Length: 374
Image (cartoon, rainbow, N blue to C red; front, side, top):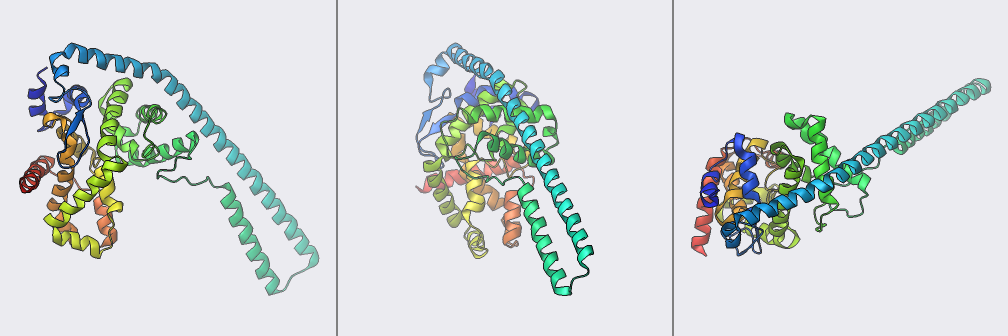
């Protein structure tokens, strides 16, 4: 395969029928940039122009990919077994909680019955006593409901979460996701996503994102495209390595700062409007940059955007992402300027269907303008 030619063609969109094969060729060539967001120097992750040895020895590269796929397959059986254990644990705990709640409810009803019998024997009470008893009964009911509820789990970066709690976070987010995407409603697809994430979380060396529910959205395109779970897991893990390098704790802050600087200089009116509406960057800009818009864009738009990221010249697709975000704001400026805080936040978190070809071309112009002014 002529990788340069493939990249040139794929950058402008990959037909859905061959996207699985094209991504399998392009993703190993992703670059790990040390200065992301505006075209900094890069260290190759494997493949691409920056890795001459990979192009000179395609057979070695193929053998390396095959070895990694075999390694992923070896862990697959263990991951599935662990996933089944978590499912059984979840079911067992739910049954225990249900039985406990039923027992509490029976005890409560028996106490109410005994109380009514005492009231009948003692005669009618005055109004004040009745109100006090009703208040006590309401407090008891509320306490019972609180004790029977599941504990809430934060979707942030709490490293203290247990395996069971992580599974609950991921399943809750997956339930939300499948309601908006019919392709993910089958049990087979959901188990595939959970298996990939379970294997990744137990082997991830970077703790800054491992408990984030957004991982469901990142892995979904790979689970959807790749028929083999091992291949989906392999490409997903390469993708996460590149994301860690570009948008991890250190580089992520730099990228956010550059983006806000570009936003202010390019769209000053919209930037001021966001400030007047008390819209903080952490509420929308950080997720946009960190997760490549996989949560905010419609699924098909996300796939089209990632075609260009994976096939960008020299493997520096993620360097374009800052300008893609700016191009989206510029394209939607007329609508955004009319919205207030709550509507703004909803719009930015659930973007409409966009012409991604036009957005990508626009982002290239923005990137060229920025670099020519440096």
